[in-house]
Length: 238
Image 1 (cartoon, rainbow, N blue to C red):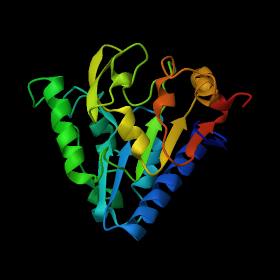
Image 2 (image 1 turned 120 degrees about the horizontal axis):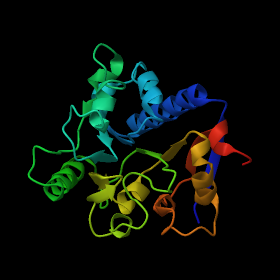
Image 3 (image 1 turned 135 degrees about the vertical axis):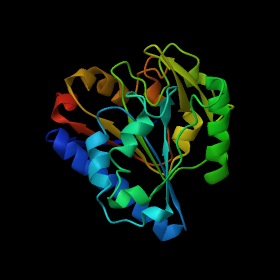
Image 4 (image 1 turned 90 degrees about the vertical axis):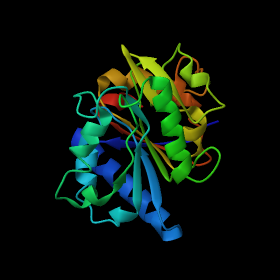
């Protein structure tokens, strides 16, 4: 059974600060032990402020490989692109984080989402050691329907176990996503949860009797304690 450590943030700004600190600590720890650190970050609106703060930290960014846990199959300059969001926050020109080595998900330059998923799997396997590939930190969001990365309930993606990437189909767009085995192989998993709309999903995530079919985020089962940083809106009565 998963062990969760809940950190209550006072508000979204406090959540961003705590998240940036956790990611920076994971990078420092990894670089104490190995030559390079590999981190996978979530997209969406919740973590953007955290990445902005993180990008200002004076870390050995040139030894950090940055990936996305999932990406919409859109052009890199599309407003919904997670890569675009990272480039305007963590990787913003002129700040320390811009020196990180970013490995975006290949998208519409390839002929199909399936081709993109295959290319992304090769990219991840070529940089991260292990089978499944091991990230030092996996930062994840939680959807109001219980999804994480692009593992949406009622779709095929959550059940994929024999590949490191797959197609996630949700909210009208094809997405490329890491699969549950890769999410679970990370040395540290961090969930960032914000807003009253996430209360029910967070309750389900923390409920030992909840099924992973209804709440695919429960498929993330690393060997270490999962840190959940949630603001007051998301925590409710927890």
